[in-house]
Image: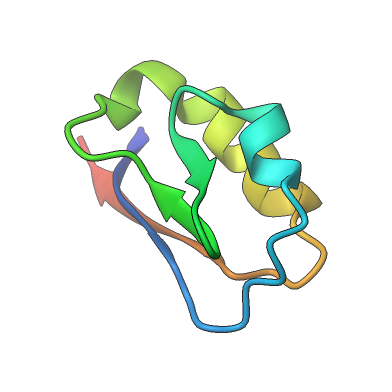
Length: 67
C-alpha cells in the first residue's frame, strides 16, 4: 500500500484557498498555498488527496512511498 511521503506546492498557485478549506490541518495560504511545517501528513492523507484533486490549477504535488 502506498503512503504519502511528501507534499509540495509547485509554482502557479493562484491562492484560491481551496486546499486550506479542504485540509486546514496541512495547508495554509500566505501569499500562495503552503504546507505546514512539522505536520504528520500520514494522519491527513484523505484530505490531502482531496485537496490535490480539487485544486483548480493542479499545483499540489504528492510523492508516494510504498510501505
